[in-house]
Structures are given as C-alpha cells and as structure tokens.
Amino acid sequence: MGLGTWQIKGDDTYRAVRYALEVGYRHIDTARLYGNEEQVGRALADSGIDRDEVFLTTKYAQHHPGGEEQALTESLRHLGVERIDLWLLHFPLKDPADNLAVWQRFLAAVDAGNVTAAGVSNHSLDQLDALTAATGRAPAVNQIRFNPALYDADLLAAHRRRGVILQAHSPLRRPPLSHPSLTALADRHGATPAQVVLAWHLAHDVAVIPKSVHRERISENYAAAQLTLSAADIVEIDALAGR
Image (cartoon, rainbow, N blue to C red; front, side, top):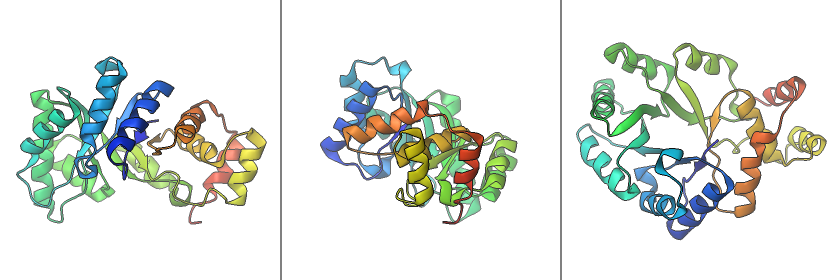
C-alpha cells in the first residue's frame, strides 16, 4: 500500500507525506502533472528515513515524444533524489508509434540507472502488448482505475499472465462507501468501509495507493493492511462489480 498524492497541493502534500511516513508507509506516489514533487521530496528529506527504505513513484505525461530526458531530470531535482524507483508513462499517446518512442526512452532511463523500473498508467491490454512486442520488455506496472465497482477477474488475470503488476488508483471511488454491503462488512470486522475496500484490494494482490490529507484517514487506510477478509467476504465485494 502506498500514499497517493493526486490533487494534493502545497503544504498539504508535505504534511500528508510526512505523516504517512511516520505511520509506516514506505511507498509514495506522485507525478509531474500533480505539481507537488518538490513537497514530496522535502517531506522525504525532513523525515530522516533512509532513502533506500522509501519507494518513490512519479509519472510523466506528454503529448509528443521528446521531453522525457528533461522531465526526468526535473523530477529528480524536485524530489531531491538520484533515482526514481518507478517511472510511469502517465497516459498513452494517441499514435502508437509515439507511445512506443516514449516507452523506449523510459527503458533507456532504466538502462542508464536513473530509474529502477519503468511502467505505464491508464493503458489497455492491447497497448501493453504493443509496447512489449516492440521492445521485448513489458511494463513493470500498469496503474489504472480499479475498485470493487470496476472489478474484472479476467483483466486482473491478463495482467498477471503478462507479468505486469496491476496497481489501483482511485480505489475508494466506487461504489460509495455507504453501500450496505460495505457498511455491513465493516461492522462485522470492527473496521471502516474504506478499510474493507483496501483490504479487498490487498486480498487480490493488487497494489493500491489511496490518497488523503487527513491524518486519521491516512492512519486508518494504512491499518487496512492488517485486516483479513474471509473468502466469503471477498466474493461478496467482488459481486459489487458494476455498482
């Protein structure tokens, strides 16, 4: 489980990341598009936690190939680190040839040692396959919207067959946390509905990056890693697909 930072700005980012690291999070997700890399980097530096203990993800969104090297240099500077653990191509480009050109530059950054692993975000299976077929190297991760309402066992299995980790953004978006099934499960487990949903992601071996600026929610979300759902609980939540 990591801390997502989408739509978090300024000092709110700094405070959220500092508190998340104090609670125990060791994965922080950001992006150039979010405009908060500097605050993430400052929070990491001020935390006193060794750099190697924290997994940093950032993303680069572009309309045309060509700006990758500059973007990576700026992300490294803003974050105050010498390498990115996971660099994601934020959105697929419309032209498959352009998308491939960007992916090749991402792989070059891995080969140069500035990035530990390269992946993508918001890509379809066909787009994943095109990148892999052209380069022989599959994205390490595909970060997509994934939650109980969007549950798709076939999609999850397809990522696993390809050796691509499915990582969930917007994990708490749907269905509403007030859904009767979620509140009933939460009551049975002495947990919150959000904790039940996050535990469901983890039960499916889906990496998940909930975001919050509230200290109590950051703590509650992290505690979901300790919640064990039964097989029947998981099936019940799976049935919320499409809700």
